[in-house]
Image 1 (cartoon, rainbow, N blue to C red):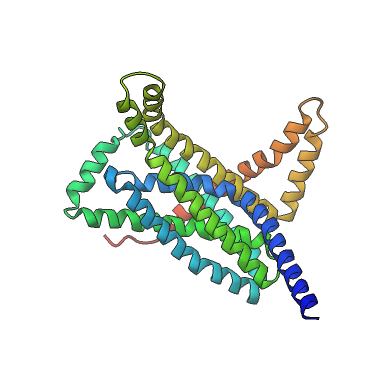
Image 2: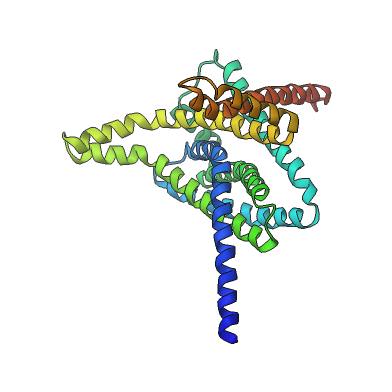
Length: 310
């Protein structure tokens, strides 16, 4: 009898873990778009720190990210337990915030194009000149990165909660915990690798005067700044796709229209299958750009109405 009970318990545990693994995979796919921006932003936040201090700073931000998720996961579970109807509005608010942030970034880059951009060394030199204590300079960098992480982590947890909303409390807790750990380790592991790409390239280039290792080293040193630019662009596009997708899923009429459009383009000969896969993402991104533009316009209007202190 005891053996049968133990086998039943083990079977239940195996079923729960299987459900958690399945939901974690779905949640990971849905939050992948947010990670592009998370990765690019955090890699940029570490720029300006002395080379030998880059990894300690990344580690400090990673610890802050874990603390953020220790706050966000229980908060998400409380929402799911007591006010589950708030999940969709919170998700849509998070999606709108992503669209707003993405559009603001694009708008800022377009309106500041004519200004002569200062190179990284000039920015770092000015920052260090303004801050006598380098420890305080590092702390300021870390605080800024942790604040950025909190916003994006909240979106990741919200999306994951939306995926696991049908599960019981234990299943939700395990799913959110798995996602939180995997995303944090994955993002900051990659950030650590990215900020050290140029150092790795320099090491390989200096190790031998010529040869394959030398050439790879030179290639890595040259590619590092371009990689950061690519991550920034990909992250911005992902913000519109993910944010727009969250908004369209919350607006039933728009979601149905996008699904219908995908079905229509699938009928096109030869390229229909590819277009059918791309159409929802493209339309979600367009919707995200429009929503982000309206949000920026509204926010700018509100800020103009608020009297300045000066």
